[in-house]
Length: 39
Image (cartoon, rainbow, N blue to C red):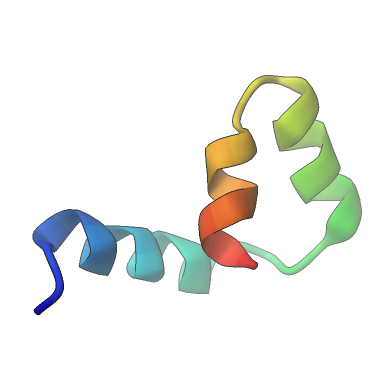
């Protein structure tokens, strides 16, 4: 059973542009959690 946070992450990931430069920029700003969840 999925938790609400997992579902929220999946929705966020689906709305994220699949652009490596954008993802790398987020990692540089300390938002690597997005990259982990969206792979």
